[in-house]
Amino acid sequence: MSSLFTILAMGSGGEPAPHPVAPAPALAAPYTLGPDTHIIIDANSYYAAWTYPGIQEIGELKQLITSAGATVSNTAIPGQTWTNMRVNNEDVLAAFKPGKRNILICGETRNWVATHGGCTVNDVAMEAALYIATVRAAVQARYGQDFDRVILCGTIPNSTFLDEPWKNDIPGLNQVLAGFDDLARADPSALGADVFADFRSKNEWFSGDGTTRAPFAQTQETVKEPISGTDWVHPTGAARAAFAEAIADALKNLKS
Image (tube, rainbow, N blue to C red):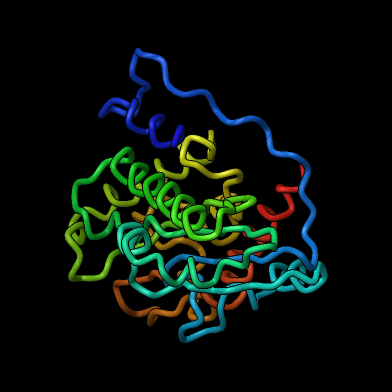
């Protein structure tokens, strides 16, 4: 629970409180994917088997998993939030493979922020940390075994759907998304994770602050929503391949 204590110790402005916080966990031992590895993906529509294949079936991520002989369960659901994922975690518990080395890849943030108008970076960081702490405790209680590693995924710039509270403050929403990424990138262990999957580093598609269309949303070939509409949320085609590549990079970083 040390990661949760770290978040709780932060002030409302994002600066650490003056009193001591729990130390970061020791560096993880070298990790190699193999046939004894089972990957669970718990996330939102970016990752789900939805109107497109699950993210584990895309590009470099698929190649990495297949070459390693690892197995995958994708429990991602379009529209769910960090809170939904925490409260309704039976799908993750059922997907866990006792006796194998289990890796959790979790990603959300966008839906929680978009439905909590005026929230702060610390607010959503708390939700992400609560989710990770809760699901880890749940698998330990059921199986007596923890996830071997946790990968926390970041965000990409996007506009909002018209029924979301931040529809009139797209810059503000995107500032929180980018701020969450900054926090998680600096120290994923503060949120209970081992590695951060950084989509924004794939600047070919995911650069920008949301005030103008990100590169992935500038052509119909790489965005799901109609290019003539006001909403642009879901990358497709080459942009989704770059999204999958960032997750593959994070899995490779578990080896170091």
